[in-house]
Length: 259
Image 1 (tube, rainbow, N blue to C red):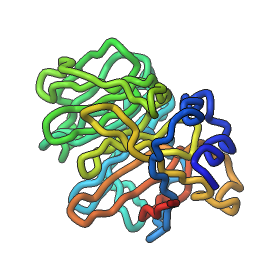
Image 2: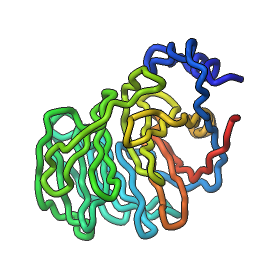
Image 3: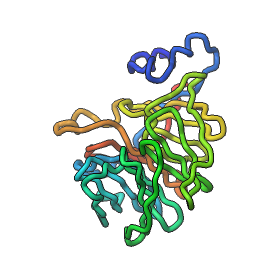
């Protein structure tokens, strides 16, 4: 099936600006997935951010009155450490910067900086947009706000030092959510879809789409689940992890080309 028909079948022509595909001869590669490992995941975790370091997962969860920062054991899904956010905050994306964890909130224009080991709150910072996803590329923080714009922030001052508009062959890609920096590219969940966009950080161009449709099977939907959200990359062992809000499982996947 062609890339156009796959996107059409997902009902995303308008939201992803895929109308431009009609007149464009450039073929962007598409990927599906192969499940390598499956791990338990807290079904009560409304996953908003996910990052992996030194064998453990750090997870940020959302919903007002239920938002947390967690250290999670990969193999068991056990919560090793947890910090609850004040009830007025809706927690969003998380990333690691040195010995610190940075966590966004949704509509409060406030981010938090924690000590990575103790989860002690070290600092608060402000930003003018909504907070959705965040990642670190080794030099800058990269932040999404639900639009087609990704903001680059100085990791020490949190001042905006640049940004890009994410485009799929000339058309803006909106609802960019959870982010992860993977081998020189930005991976972004597109909210309310089963798609991950791979984005070139210099240009904002989408270089490929990853279709994760069917990842969570019907047997895992006996209780309420929400959308795909959560990408973590183990750079040391080249492993990619994905999950979703209220999902009972977290998956290690490999990408498989549809070409």
